[in-house]
Image 1: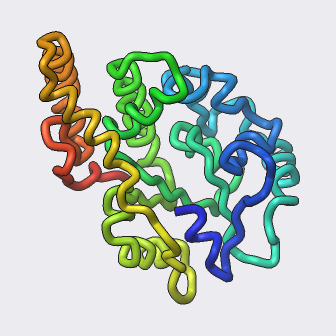
Image 2 (image 1 turned 90 degrees about the vertical axis):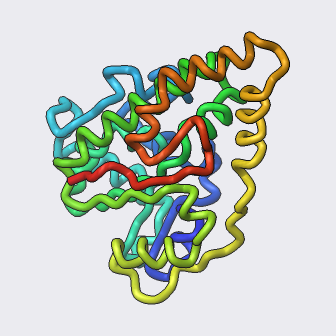
Length: 242
């Protein structure tokens, strides 16, 4: 999404910064990065990671400092400036207090797919990572009512109907003309869907029992976000926000 938007002539995003995924969290010293809260699969459950307008860090001086640190990586001649970092999900209110005109575009992906993909980088159980996904999104939903401008996009909708999704996003950002769709891969979740199916149909009883235990614990919570652990292709709306 960020790469597509950065191709629009009115938008500037980070590229070639030399940091992981060109994420702004690694290009500043105002607030702790996800790494300082335990990294992927951990940061969202750290109480200190949830920043709001009440944080001691929410000052005009820090707003200037943060902009000064990000500024060299943007083309300031363009009116829309993008910063993409996963921890933003639990610090929207803080960022809004620093930048009152900010707009928040939240891309949400199936909790099973996110958790299975995260297992490549961390030594955690699938159950722990699923709990972290739900906690993070619960925090966001709780904060969203205080945001002035926010839009949620399902990752699955983005990859299956890229042009329409980008058109909606362009409207949200007041962009003129189409956002280049580029080459958005539609199969990047397939391997994780297969892994989940293998757990469900495994010969080993303990593996099937693990699948059932996860479904029993998280199915209702997944349904609330328009997802299902019983059927990863099922999609519904994200809960009302604002």
